[in-house]
Image 1 (tube, rainbow, N blue to C red):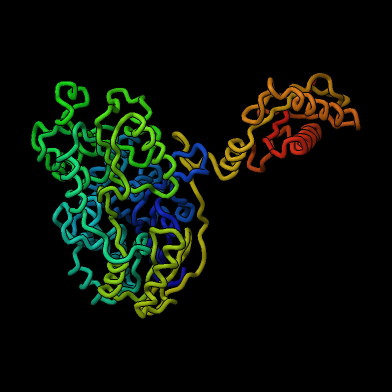
Image 2 (tube, rainbow, N blue to C red; image 1 turned 30 degrees about the vertical axis):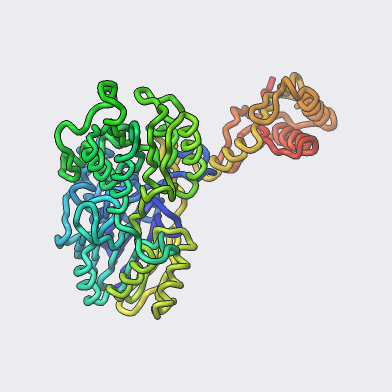
Length: 569
């Protein structure tokens, strides 16, 4: 590392939306900002979550001075329980609500006694190694959100993610513009900023707009109102509760994360709920439908979330009925559109009225639009800018926006995962790349599956699998028994007997054509990192794979995964 330079590295969150994790490094001191998850894209078969890749930090664990969390959304705190152990359990710093939401995750992972946390507040000033940390309040769709000023010997860096200039936020605490002005006077060397709404002109509407829409819905809904949103969107939950109270409805939180987050936020004073307002799902039978409001998870069409279960008629306690009004108070995350619209279709089939999209302003973004992004640049006047929390097109559009304001385009650095950038006074440069990939969570395992496994799953989902089982003489390599063929997801062996028999004959012919060196291994079909099972690496297995694959492609123009199982006798 170049001496006297601040090094800034995204291990996630650059050129993508989600899994935000940024490293700020000055010589022997490292501070991490955020540690979030990304929900899998449609082609990531069977993957539950995607984590940042911490390979860069593995030999620098002793240098980590702390983890700073900006707010309580999953894409900023969700990876902490999965990764903090590998980072040596550094202290986690966050606001009261953020740490409250994190505490439940730590409890689930049985890490409560291992992870040290420290509550911070806007206006604080504290030291982590050579870094002076200054949190300041920013408006977002969840209360208690902050940005950070990080001052090292190289200069002042600003980390401002997931923000907007909402002058009438639900928590009555707007973005601290005076602090931004003060930071601007201190000549910051770099600004790291959210840019996901750079394509949207004007200003992002205030969260209060959603409250007005809720008021209209609750006033006219003939039966139950079911509102789905992110469990961490505490401001949205507060507005739903306010509307329910105004129109004499009891509120039922549904979904494990919604119930937990509602309880934590209420306990910490971030949800104002009069006694007697919240009831359990089992108590709904004692009330008429027009006195019930349900607040639940499932706004992204997640298969196991509460709204999806209701739409599929397999929720244990709540069934959708004619006269229900369902409000989806979120916009689909890119890649989730199909799942969301499938849930909406099912809700309509069950007789519900569904309000979503542009029907009413039941959702507004928590991110800054073009005019707000311009204002931040004018207020802060950084020497260099790193836009993030957006796909590559968002970063490129942000650079165009900055250039349109007269900002030097060379001073807008477009980063990708692992980009290593260095800064000091009047100096900023992308110098190299750290090894960064996707780390998958599948069930309870982390990193056990990689790109090769995901590609295999994609192949299986596309063309299926064909298993060819043969017995071969140990001494001569001649075919003794078989082949037997098992098909899954390719063709039905019962309905495609000609094709299956043709494949068997092709295998027999390949053994009779020439002497085959006997196989020395067994196969259970499991692929190695190189894409071959032990048996596939033997001559007999390789011949079966080649012959059957060629035969099936000539007959069907499809390429199922062929798994040869060679048994020696």
